[in-house]
Image 1 (cartoon, helix red, strand yellow):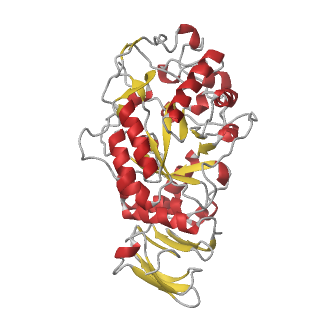
Image 2: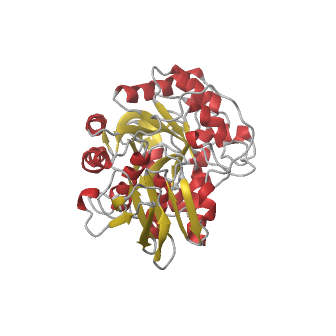
Image 3: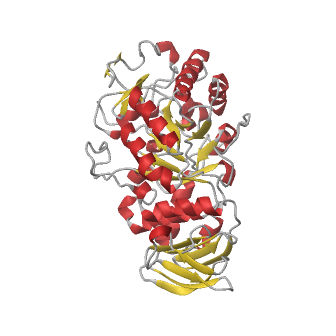
Length: 455
């Protein structure tokens, strides 16, 4: 079958346009000040996700883990086969229903909630036998959907300035479900309810931009208890569909955040990051991320291939009060279509890096504290979180040594971007009675202090 990337970003388009009001559900998964950081373990087998919850995510203070689609999908080694469902059975390459339920139980025991990536805009683009043995064709999925359950527009989306084209035609030839149909809505709601019954706490709605907010509202309304939702809606100037249309359903992925970070950090002009929320979704509606599996492949954001600068960007995201952060942790690749590693090697383990785990603890420690004491110059910046924390970041090629205003009480603090508080020898910073500290920030490095990590 012809290669296809199926998430909305792979349509390589940009969004804007009219806004439809929808009834609001709570936007954040948890109240501010609690554990709001998500780790997306892209294409990670469910058994390994459970182990990560126990070994890393729970101890580090992550609140959520997002897992790749669980539903049965087309055969193939490419990553995007997971995004072409052929039934709603849990029978994909990441594990079966027992593995899925075991993962959820293990993560919950570690204090980590589970977000399931839900592909409900479309089914497949061809015919064959699925990973769970289901025989299917493009508009016929026995026991799930038939021809009449799909939109009549059976051609690829061609005009992103036309709402009907975006939301009723086919995204890269994928059979587009008629989410205006009561039967389709009920079937989707039943699938999501089933995942909730297994213990899933919430959903990432893949390709939400390609379904009307009203249709998704109707699906959510049919569910017994919909849980937390975050919608994938890519912004772009001049298009018919805007991210703001979906904020009444829950959080929305803020794609502009990662692009802004890349431009500022690579361009050596960090001043504009102080007000990074400007021109974007409201903070209480935005899920922020440095990169995801689409943007790391299309080059629009920093990625693991950018090394320390990528970690620095994640540190900024976790330190700045804007939005609800999502740390992307995938695998190394040279072929953009390549699927996940079959063995233990090749994962980036970004969620487990000290520069990241230390900043997850930082965010939990500072809570809602106001951002104060901003300083920036060229590729460097620093700011405080009103007596609770302080961070300095240096995107430059040489080390930065200066005296910073930290807002912290006097004492010796662990630089949590370099070491865990209980193993901090050689990685401490002393704050004086005046709240100032002299510190050296290495090239592409971070110094982060918080009140919960005094040496």
